[in-house]
Image (cartoon, rainbow, N blue to C red; front, side, top):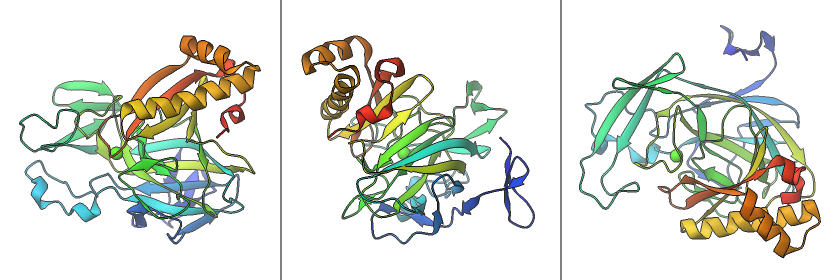
Length: 317
Ligand code: CA
């Protein structure tokens, strides 16, 4: 994929003028049905989202202290995009076609935060170079796997801070949200109001220290709609599996939600009783941790595709 902006500001993909672009200056700090759309797209259209890193692009030097950060500029997401025809009760389908990240990412550790927040440690800022698809962490080279930390639609009412997560998506920090995957979001508000940001050049399951390689960049997506039905949680599709992306106040709660959708989906897909589907899921469905450091904890139930076939078997309450 070759996406770039020419000297006239026209976005091109593989040399063809195709798509719409949303600048990284168009930021929201909460997902809400009241957010004004900054762009519209029809089903099937491509849209390029420019994104800012989760720290608002504020950290340019390792000498900067966290006290100097303007925390009101943290966790911004680009958007929202109004998808024509999307209504509450539908599903928004988002194909992640390409993710490009810039060459410098940033990591932080913040006292009291992360999986080890109870321990005594100092605040620290670290710049990390990303080059030739490698993350250079001091002398250690790691394969970059660009992913989207925050992506979601508006909730039905109220607002959810962009640093949090829920049934609408949000700050899911799920390492599998990469180029080549497809996401299904339940639509709660007219137009769906898709927004995204918080790219990571690399993150492991858990995101232990509360920071991945936070980086600015751009994401090319194609949007589509499935009318009149929706999953209870965002669903991620890869070539070989479907994953229910659930969250809860605890990991236990998140596991329960993810498992319930997976087992009901398998029962429906295979024509099995709950008991049989429950047993089959115990043999085939992997519960994996998305992250343990955000306001809600995230888990995914990973279901082999050959077991369930059509994703719509997961569109159950
Ligand atoms: Ca994040």
